[in-house]
Image (tube, rainbow, N blue to C red; front, side, top):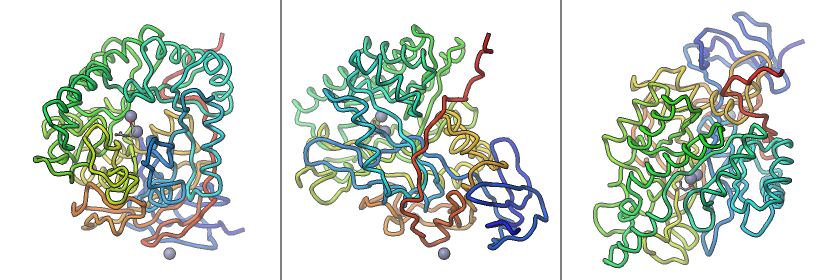
Length: 471
Ligand code: URP
Ligand code: ZN
Ligand code: ZN
Ligand code: ZN
């Protein structure tokens, strides 16, 4: 009985090991590892090539409902297409509650938005914006039990943010049910105060976005998030950490024995505040995201802490808004003041190649750390491991074969629906040659559509920490 597919002589890299192996695939799963495996209906030669588990992008925004004329450019079709072509085989976008509406309604709405469109598997984080008694006591516990085991809490953005008391309420639910809360840590009042002052001085260009959100507003909120989690005694994960002062808060928490995990993103390694503009031009609106990119010294701190293990997860925070047209960075076709530019930059497809090239081949992190940060740990953090995030017998056949060699990033060669990449023209040392999503070839230098092949995954509880023994 031949296998469906065998990858021959791969240099397989997992979070813990590097080994030469054939990888045999049957019904979308890895069924055998070892050299000299039997024949398959289809054989692929991976001799001399590094093979890693498919990426798990645990922070990306797809087809999220936004206000006014602004719309996200990527839905579950174009978003997962772009993911697949960049080696990512699992995405975890958000189902965002709308104030005054139920959380359950959000889950149903986003499930419908994704239905039948995805080329790779997906799960959802919840975004809690209105923690009513019904949400806290009924909806959240029921949704956690159904496999929606992580939720994002915003400390900023008027239509999303929770106050400290509400955050404590949500964290208490996370503690009771073993869910993982992700925190967007920026001090909303400081941002609002600074924004008003900048606008009063006539400073409205995109570059002032960075001045309205200096490091200290992130540092303060990071510290506060840690304190709130300490009070409730629950693990948390701080998302999109941008630089030294926030890192120091997390280091401090760790020395106190607190279970504080952290995520960072490519923009904090490869962009600086100067990418938002050095003059009054609107071009920098492309790189407006929150927290904003900082400076070179902060980039170095992020690299160091990827290397030393402080960061658990490396995600894209893909937030797809077009620059041209009326629905993205220029709402209604207008060049707006910095506080009205939709926040976020695209990055689903470039996340893995950027970190593989500049991290692994640049000698800053090991290949095993790369796998841990981009695949294994996100799978563990969101209850998808060992189905996702590993090269192991029984795991899904989500795999990336790497091609080393010069590769220049060009937006026209990417597969998202955004009309720019912040990394245009950047020269990388590698790019995925092949992506398998549950055994299906979705990328081999060409995109092979598998619309509807991507399934909604129900998440278990996170497995980042040992669980106390059941008495
Ligand atoms: O600027 C960003 N990061 N936009 C996406 C939403 C978020 O806060 O992650
Ligand atoms: Zn955020
Ligand atoms: Zn985000
Ligand atoms: Zn092909």
